[in-house]
Amino acid sequence: MDGAGDRAGTARPYRICLVCLGNICRSPMAEVVLRDVLERRGLGDVVVVDSAGTGGWHVGEPMDERAAATLAAAGYDGSRHRARRFEPEWFAERDLVLAMDRDNLRTLRRLAPEGADVRLLRSFDPDAPEDAEVPDPYYGGREGFVRVLEMIEAAAEGVAEHAARAVGRAPERR
Image (cartoon, rainbow, N blue to C red; front, top):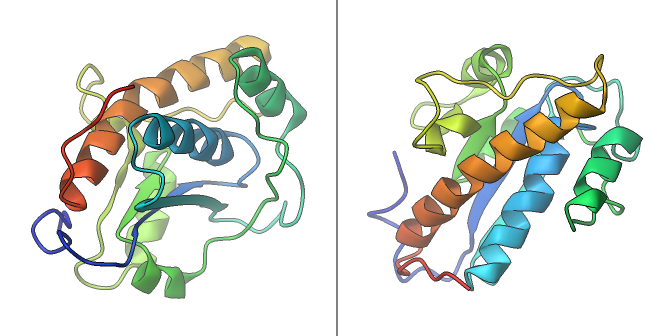
């Protein structure tokens, strides 16, 4: 189910959830970047983006300071983020759920109802190898966060194009 054929003309926004393990590094970075890309393409009013983790260890915490600093250095603002845990009932309210890695993808697919659209984020990057993951930078240094941001930015354009088709709008570049 890609949502593209059954969404055009609906009043409900297209909803995307980005998911990693703890919702303090990769998925909130992806949420901020994707929201920015969608706004620039004129899709911010019809596509809603959020993020969550499959684990609940960090619920309520802000984004990892290294992730926030990496975003800020690139001109993004992640200061409002608070970590959440993905709940299975959210599938009913999301059109697309994007996992950062294969472990989280497996977890999400076990929880998902039949027909849920659950994929790897990097599947939207035309230059990424098949089954490419966004690695967890948590135990590394700043360079890992910079690389993660690059991977997210490369995939975000493809996600935005997918969302534009899903809501019946030609992609708009600004």
